[in-house]
Image (cartoon, rainbow, N blue to C red; front, side, top):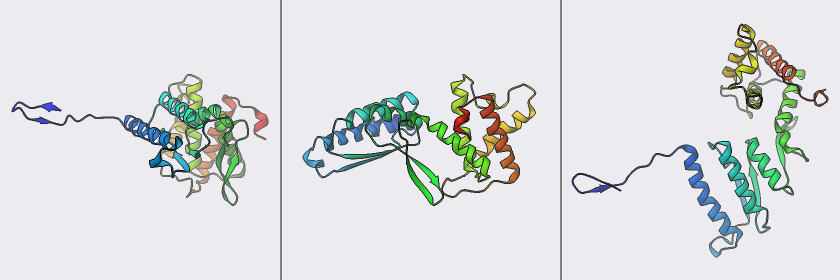
Length: 230
């Protein structure tokens, strides 16, 4: 409470970030989940937990902490069946490393729609799996606008791994690289549109040509195992 000059008091409002808000809510969820796992009377009816991307708006340190806490909570109990979905690769990797007996799947596009694919023993190769998908569509011509979003994500991780401050630095390799400047603008523009995975929009042929060139430059300049990309 805050005291006013007239002697009255009013609530002191505290501004928190979206990430702080999520952490605050997550603490409540973990407490309730613990009660359900322990079979507390108020929650003994619970049989399943479904957790959808609990680390939205969190930095990677907090994402790792949440994954480790969640794994610690779940891996030594067999009362509740749990499904966790996420698009955050670091969070996914930590869970997989902590919960080695858990089933792990990718949601992938197939000819008949979408399917769950077993990650086998290499779930941390998510970025390679996505790069293989981009390589495939570049070959077949089945390139949709959302593929630029996937390409941008892979390029950002590549730039960070190699110590660059932004993805533009791995596209524009020389100060006077006009093509690199143009390609960086394309990636920034086309990866921020309203491109849904579930309502794919085909690209214009010129954009497909540029997509292939950017992808090829990435794979040539930052070498991946060529055996993975026949």
